[in-house]
Amino acid sequence: MDPTSSDTNASDQYNALSYQWVIFGLLSVSHFLIAMFFFAWGPLAPMLKGELAIDNSQLGLIVSAMYFAMMVISVPSGFLVDRYGARVMLMLSVSLVGMATILLSFSSDYPTLFLVAALGGSGYGMINQITTKGLMYWFEPAKRATIMGIKQTGVTVGGSLMGLYIPFCAQIMGWHKAVLALACAILLMPLLSLFFYREKPDFISDSESTGTAKAKGGLRLLLLRPLVVTLTFLFASYAACQSCVVAFLVVYTEETFGLSRVIAGSFLTVAMAAGTISRIVFGLISDRMLHGDRVVPIALLSLIGVVGLSLLTLFSESPPLWLLYAIAALLGTSLVGWNGLAITLVAEIAGHDLVGSIMGIVFTISWGGMVIAPPLFGAIVDLQGYAAAWLMLTMVLGMACLGFTAIWIRQRRVRAS
View (cartoon, rainbow, N blue to C red):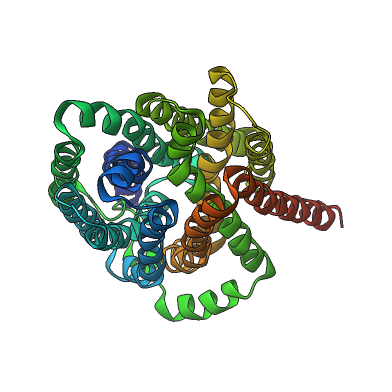
C-alpha cells in the first residue's frame, strides 16, 4: 500500500469532515427560506379570504395547486438530481421559489395566486431530493437521521417564523411588502450555492458514486418491494393530515373561537416549534437509542398525532388558550416532526445511486395526499363544520398508525426467525 496515497486519502476525509458543515449550512438555509414560502399560505389565509373574497374550498385549491406541482415535478427532478447532481438543481429549485415569492407579493386576484402556488410548488418539489442527495454523500450513516432531522428543522423554523412574521409585518407594512422582503432573501441562496457548494467529498470517486445500468435495474426491483409500496401510501396519509393542519389551523382558531390573527398565527408557530424539537429528538432516538430503527419512532409520532387531532373534534365552545397551545404542540410534534425520519428511511433503502430517483417517485405518490386532502377538508368544513373535518383526519392518521405498527411487528418476527 502506498503510504502517500493513504495520507492523501486521510487528508481528504479530514477536509470533508470540516467542509460537510458548509454543505449542511447551504442546504439547511435554502430549505429554511423556501419553507417560509411553503408555510406562508396558512398565515396569509385570513387576509386572502378577506381581500379576495374566497371561501375555504378555494383556499384549499390554492394549496392543492402547490402540492400538485410538487407531485408532478418530483419524479423528473429526482432523476435530474441523480444525473446532474445537487448543486445545479439546488440553484434551480431556490430560484423558482424566489420568483414565485416575488409574484406573490404583487398578486391581487385568485387566478394569479393559483399560478404562483404552482410555480412555487415546482421549486419546492425538488428540495427533498436535492438536500437528501447532498447529505447522503457528506455524512456517514451513524449521523444521518439526526442530521436529516436537524436539516428538516429549517422547514419547521421557517413555518414558525411565518406564523409570526406575516401577521406582525402585515400590520406594519402590508402583507405584499412583507412577502417581497422574503423573496429578496430567498434569491440570495442561488448565488451562494454557485460559489460555495461542492457536489461530494474529494475522496469519493465518480466510479464509487455512479452506476447507471445497475441503478436502473435496481430501481425497478426497489419499487416492487412490499415495504416500499406500503411506506409510500402510509406517507401519503401522513402528508394529507400535515397539509390540512398547516393550511387551516390558523383560520380555524380565528373563525371558530374569535381569536385575533396574531394569537391564531401563534398556534402555527407553536406547532412548528414542536416539530422542530421533534425532528431532532426523534432523530437522536432513532440513531442512538434504537440503533438505526426508523419505523418505531414514526409509529409513535403517528399515535401522538391521532391524540391531537381527536381532541380538536371535541370542542363545542371556546377552550382555554393553554389547551389549544398544547394541542398545537402535539400536532406539530407528529405532523411536522415525521419528515426527517421518513426521508432517512427512504434514502437508506435506496442508497447513494438511487436516492434522488426513489425519493422523487415515493414522494410523488405521497404528495398525492397533499393534493387531495386540503380541498376535501375545506369542502367538509363548508358543508359540515370543522369537527367533521378533524374527525376525517383522525381516521386517516389512525390507519397510518396501525400500518406502521404492523410493519414493526413484522420486522420483529423476521428478526426473531
